[in-house]
Every structure is written in structure tokens, then in C-alpha cells.
Length: 462
Image 1 (cartoon, helix red, strand yellow):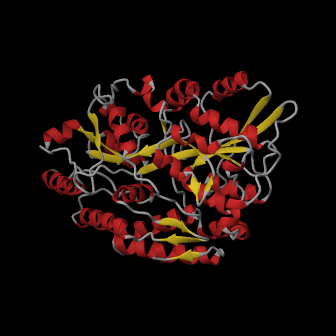
Image 2 (cartoon, one colour):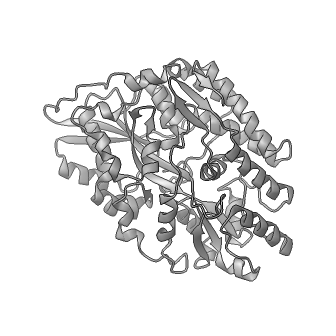
Image 3 (cartoon, helix red, strand yellow):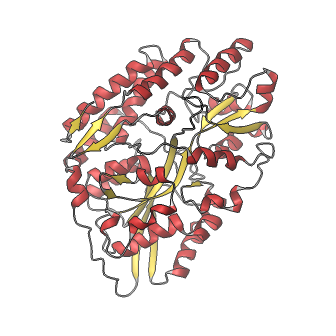
């Protein structure tokens, strides 16, 4: 689910950079809360009574932007649970801050909802505040037994330390979306490795300087970090009571060096992603491919309608030849807040929106077009239909393979907004020639570690 497009929830969150002063103010506002020890958050109490509620119950469900035809979703729930009403609240961004930042402030002010659906990359940050309920503590909820319903890698993203802090909804496994007609015109093979991708990128731009293989965006660190995930990057992990921070790890540096070759050869565009120019270049054939997530078909159809029927989907070019490994860009989870007075009912709603097959077949897939982490939902008939935009290809067959190969144990860490915003700023400097991409990662490492220590978090470096 996304901040990119208010029409759907099919895109991942853009790391919108607030002005520095405003960002410092809201981060300072949560600093004392974030100093809560990680293990304390994992072991704290589970909020209200877990006994069955007496009489009708109303739960507040927080979402970032309007759900299209949300009444259909809520009617389905209330038909099955007539005594549990859901009050959906749309919490939009405040100023230039992202909605998650506003929710962090709401949590500090004791205005947290019962349940929320937000980008999984922010989950560890909420866990660190001590505000998110460990679902394993809900009496009778049996949350741990739900693991078999989901992709193993997605299940790992909702765990911090020994706690289970959410249920995964959708995911953004990477694939290569490419223009079949342009690949044929310029006699390019579909790359199966990243080395081949770089070679084809350089060859294409030499053949036609007006055409580029892809784009390295200057306004979002997410694509880079998803590629690094596929390459084996593990920027954060928990050891005991500390966070181990390794943003500039060997796998991430490998990605940086690879992308640097394209920058040095001027064989990659560096446009802000989802800008009007970026969309125009896709629509007019100046971009031959897009390494993107499972939600990409939606925006492609929207910004490049003239290219209908000319696209295809292939597996992500691999960092290690012969080894299928992908990363995820985007994805959301259902989270229960510790302040709820009805944890059992809130968990039941979280289960409903993540595992109920009617919800997937009648709502998530047809109305919001998100790709499920739920294994049964991945077999939905709606995902097996040929796509006219992709020339009749059954694109989700390829996307499913990518989803199955996403690496486990990737953690976004407890300060995701600071990490992504800082890295985005340094990557932008690298794109503009002020430093290399490798240097950008190393500077990000220094800045994030210093920031975390300033917030009172225990940090180790490798």
C-alpha cells in the first residue's frame, strides 16, 4: 500500500523528505518514547482485557488514504461479526511529513487507534515506541499458528526480536518490466544477471542516446534498498538488547558499485520517480525497462497508455548467476496497538483482512490490486488471467516466482524514516556527482548510527 497514488493502495510509500527543521521537531517529539528499550517493548503488557467483550464493540481502524469502496469490505466483516463494528479513519499526511510520522505523534499523545494498516518498513519503529501489541500475548488469539498462511519471508518482516507485531498484507517482490518492441528493435537479450543488465544498458544507450534501459531515481531510496535486499543486504538486525546497524554492508556496496558504472557511463536516467517527465519518458519509449515491484502494472498502465501490449515481465536479473533471489519494495501489515481495550477482537479483524479468502477475492485483488503475502490468495483466479497491457502474458506467474524467492531476515530497523530520508539525500548527491554511491552508503551509515545513539537506542556496528 502506498503514498504514491491516492487512487489505489498498490504502490509503496514514497519517502517524502520534510524540511529539516520540521523533521527535527517531530522526531524530537518522539525521542523520549523511542528511547524505550527494545526488549522492554517486546515484554510489555498486552493492553486491555483479553476477555470476550460484553455487548457491541467498536474498533477504530486507521488507514493512510481512502480505501476504494471500503463499505464492501466493512459490510463483509459485519456480516460475519455483527457485534464488532469497525470505524475506519483516514489519517492523511500533515504538511510534508508522511502519515506514519503523524501516527507516531498520535501514539505519543495517546490517540492511537485499535488497528492500523501501514507500510511494513515502519513496523520496527513503532515497536520501539512500545506502542504496538505483541500478538502472541493475546489470550486465545493463537497468532503464532498463523505463520503457515504467509510467505515465510513476509512473516519474518513482522517479527522484531522474539515478538510478533503484525500480520502481513501485501508485498512488492521485484521483477523486470521491459518493452518487448524496444528489446527487439535494438537486438537486446532479456538480461538474466545484473552484469548482463549493465552491459545491455550501456549497449542500448550507445545505439540510441535518446533511449535508456532504466532510471535511478533521485527522490526515493526504496528501489536501491530493494535491490540491495535481493543482493543479500541485511542493514539492521537485533542482537540481545541492541540493534546492529550495517547499512554499508558488502552486498549494498556491490549494488552501489554496479549502479555507479551506469552513472559513470551516463547510461541511466536520474529522474524523480513518478514525476511527469518520468511518466512521459515511459509513454514515449525513452525508457526500455523498469526494475520494479508487483504493484508496477498499475502505474505503468496509468502513465504509459500508448504502450499497451508492448510490455512483458521477466525475472529480476540476478546478482549471483544461477541463484534466484529477490527483494521487496513496498508492502503493508495489519497492526494492533497496545492501547486497545479489545485486543482479541482487534486481532480477529487483523486476521480477517489478511487471511480471509473472500476479502482477497472480492476486495483486495479486484478493487485495490495488491499482491498478497497470503499463500492461498496467491492462487486466486484473478491473478491467473492474461494481461492485455502485457500482450496477453499471465504476468503474475512470473511475479509469484519472484515473491517466493525474496530473501528472509531483512529488517528495516527502528528509524526507517530517518534512514530512508538520509540515504535519499546522499544518493541524490551521488547522482549529481558530489560523491560516489558507495560513499553515500557510508555517510548514511554514520548519520543513522549517530541519530540512533542520540535517541538513546543501543547500537552496535559490525
